[in-house]
Structure formats: C-alpha cells, structure tokens
Length: 194
Image (cartoon, rainbow, N blue to C red; front, top):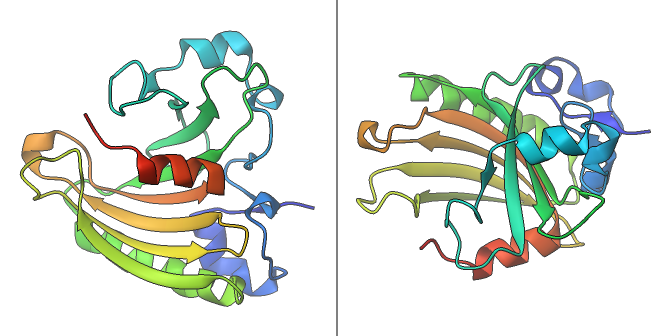
C-alpha cells in the first residue's frame, strides 16, 4: 500500500507510518514515481498543460520535460511532474508539490526543518545531507535554495527545499517536496541551464 506524502500529514501523523526505503511507496496528491500520469489525467489535459525545459529552452537537451498543474490538495503552489519526452505512457520520473510562502521565507525554513526532522525518522536508512546554493536560473546568484536531501541506495532522492527568490526574478518563495528517480536526477546533474 502506498503512503501519502503531504506536508500536514507528515507533521501530525508520521509516527504511525511504517518506515520505508523506496520512494515508489510514497505519493504526492495520490501519485508516485513509476505511475502513469494517464491514470490521473487525460492525454489532452497533459498536452494542454504548460510544459517547461524543452519548450522554454531551459536545458541544453530535451530528454525529459516538466509539466506544471494546479493543485487540488494541500499544496498552495503547483504540482510538477517529469516525463521522458517521447513516452506514450507518461511514466512519472519525478513529482513535486509546492507551498507558497509569499514574503515569509522564515516560515518556509521553519516548515522545512520540521518536515526534514520527521523524514529523518521515517527514512532511517537514507543518507541525509544539507545543501545551500544559488539557483542557476538567477545569474546574479542572489536567489538561494536551501535543501535537505535524502539519498536512497537505489540512487533516488527525496528533497525538501525552500526557494528564496529575489524580487527581480518574479517568482514566489516556496517550499518544495520532491520525489526524484535516479534516472532523472542523473540527467539533471549532467544538464546546464542555457
């Protein structure tokens, strides 16, 4: 049975969940990596959703692309799904949910810390690391991403991160919870922004 990853649920009831070592056992808004997005959305809806990476020229290649969709759950931002470019089944290689923190990045850091603590208990075999870096999309280097990353033995990751964007970038500060397969993570690590 899959376990539903949701920020509020994590905070209030994580202690009763079974510990796990495979990100496919977790869900964001009912979906998990390895699922077909066609189980949740029509092809027409997926094709009509705004696509990123390839169409927007974000990365140097188009092996994977990102689709952003509105959230119907606790995520006040959006849901992001990653697919291979020519996959007719729209297998999900990564799923993320975001919560906006407009003009309140300190609250984001507090929530990230709470979630990370709970996930550390929940993922006893995952290797935890923290990372803070400038976001590649901001050439000034002033937009900061503070992440807690849980690495699994199969190479997949769960990431909890706060994105602190400069006003000039025009994006909302937010918390992002992501489930990422090894294949997508390897591709991202070898790609660069144009």
